Amino acid sequence: MAEEEAATVKEPLDLIKLSLDERIYVKMRGEREIRGKLHAYDQHLNMILGDVEETITTVEIDDETYEKIIKDCD
Image (cartoon, rainbow, N blue to C red; front, side, top):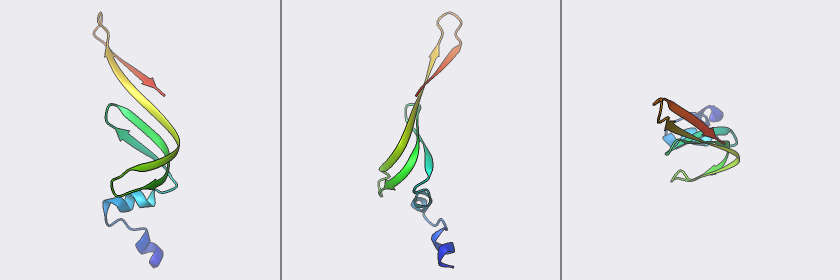
């Protein structure tokens, strides 16, 4: 019964607590994405991640054809 109560989500930060030592996905401003293993966090949502992969997506418009060109940079 105690394990069941510990695994329930009552507050928003409880979901993050359940994600400790798991790989998480963080979508940031500026079309940036980070994936990594969550080691620790605080009440301000500062996070310590390990084995991190960062992806930056840029969208450019071709001057001649006006088509969108999407580029991913890891």
